[in-house]
Amino acid sequence: MRSIDVVANAGNASACRPHALKVAEKRLKLTELVLRCVICGAGALVAVLVGTDTEVMEIFTLEKRAKFTDMRSLL
Image 1: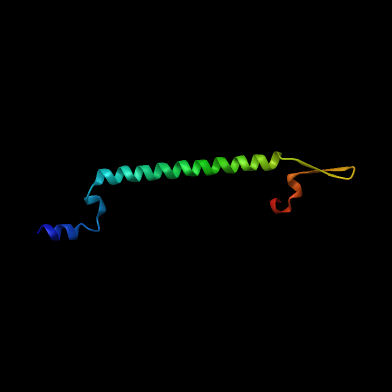
Image 2: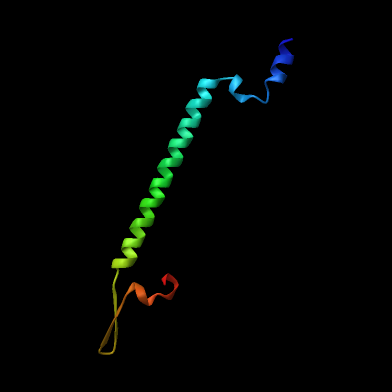
């Protein structure tokens, strides 16, 4: 009878150790949340850096100041 119970519960993972699986699921959700926040913060930082970055190029005596609007891929 014992082997039949194990086979019957093989598809039901929560029947084995419900507390351990809940803890693992919470850790996974927390890790996913932290990674999403890090990605959003990095994206905001990149947007600020691209928006405020300036570059000056000298061609002979002329100075050309590049801006983010000069980059056609961002428009």
